[in-house]
Length: 91
Image (cartoon, rainbow, N blue to C red; front, top):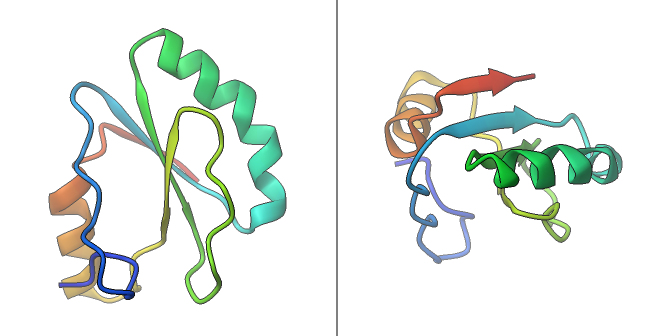
């Protein structure tokens, strides 16, 4: 389905409420996202942060779910969007 880490574990559940999907182009961008994810959490907004796939995921920014980005094909992208149902995107 294009979900999960590819290591056999299931995809985490989507949090209740509003969800912002933030895509970072690499793990070096994650420290800058910490104040953003913390502030959004105070306002009740969940954050899903994605990184390009292929490498092991570092620790997630505070208050965020960190996942590999979906494969850039219709099936995996649709499965990803159907699971997470983000309310807004920040790329």
